[in-house]
Length: 125
Image (cartoon, rainbow, N blue to C red; front, side):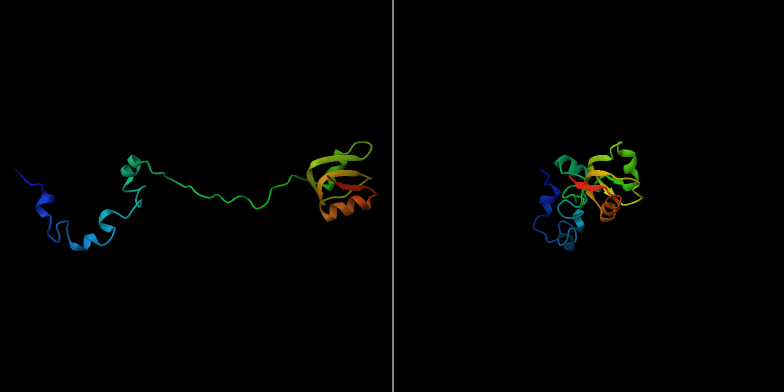
C-alpha cells in the first residue's frame, strides 16, 4: 500500500515547505475573509459570505424644506390677499407690492419684515 505524501512527511519540521511558511498569512493568501473578492472568490461563494458594502448609512443632517420667495406670493394670492402655503417656507428675495396675509410653515427674518412693512401679516402654521 502506498502512503500519501502528507502522511509520509508528517513529523518532519518542514514538510509544508520552508518553516517560514507557517508564520504569517502570506502562504495561504491572507487570514480569514481576506481575498474573498479576489483570489478566494469561489470559496466565498460556496460558503455564502456577503459581498459588497454593508453597515451603517449616514443620514442627512437636516430635512430639506420646500421654499417660495416673497416675489412669488403675489401670483399665489387671491383677490383678498390671502395665501395659504402650509408645506412651504417663505424666503426674502423680491418685493411685496400689496397687503398680504400669508400662512406658511416658516418665514425668514427678511421675508417677515417685508410682508409686515407692506401692511400684511405673516402667520406660522
